[in-house]
Image 1: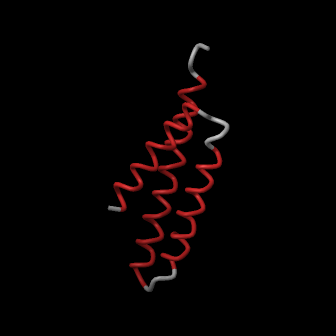
Image 2: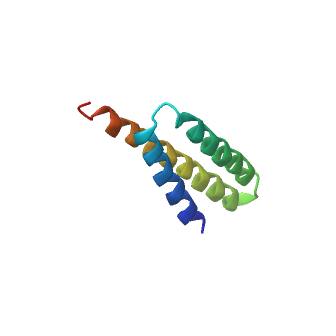
Amino acid sequence: MLIAGVIAICVILAILGFLLPHLSNRARRGSDKGFSAAQRAGSKAPGPFGRWLSKSFGESRRATDRSHSAGRQARSKLPF
């Protein structure tokens, strides 16, 4: 379920980055705040489970940032 949610957020951010590059920054910052809060909360879990949770939410945050920037880069390569 979490993986499907992250994929959906990535697709939405890529589309927003392509269609509305300047206005999509707010959506990216919102997803970053959510994943960062989850990453901090996950890091407080004991032992290797805490490292695993922290790492997974950090990877999700990076994936959404990459999809947003890919949408913006695709937009900048258009001829018009």
